[in-house]
Amino acid sequence: MTKPYSLIVFDWDGTLMDSEAKIVNAMQAAVADVAMPFRSREQIKDIIGLGLPEALSALFSDIDKRQSGVLIEAYRHHFLFMDETPMPMFDGVAEMLKTLNRQEYWLAVATGKARKGLDRVLDECNLRHHFHITRCADECFSKPHPLMMEEIMDFVGVAPGQTLMVGDSEYDMLMAQNAGVDALAVSYGVHEKERLLNCGAPGSVLGCLDDIRELHDWLAE
Image 1 (tube, helix red, strand yellow):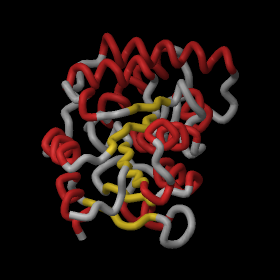
Image 2 (cartoon, one colour; image 1 turned 45 degrees about the vertical axis):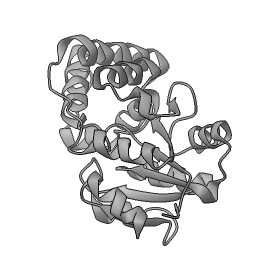
Image 3 (cartoon, helix red, strand yellow; image 1 turned 30 degrees about the vertical axis):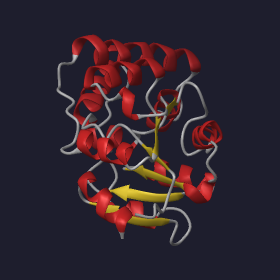
């Protein structure tokens, strides 16, 4: 099979892992702890994919650096130690990654998670060995800035024209566009299908999968 790409970069939350409910629960609990104004599930869902400081700035336009730091610590406490909401991998993820490895794709993760959080879930899910490189929002500029994507491509020596970004948010789609990379959306994450297909320049998002297991057939076509 002739491969259309050499490198496939995945978002994590909402694309490979069903973590939306836990992120929302932890954020709402943290907001209550520090007595900041309530934010709805939809408001919090909308900022999943950004780095934490950028996400908080989007949720609270007048938040200052001190308040942001306090809220970040409260969120991490709830997410890591208090909230027990399960975070399963979406059906078929492990087998899909194994198949892509056998087909000799370079695989990477570009995520709004912090390094500590990503390392933890990679080990818990036993998926670390599938990825050649990972980049997190506390190591680079947050999406939609292209730095995470550029560092990944530079590390593996792959050009933008040989790279595909797969994600569930408009931040993923815009990061891909900013890096000159093709983008493929998934419809089951935080942003709805129509929003994903219409974000960025016309035609910059190549399609939208309803199930990550469809990726193999999409690449074959």
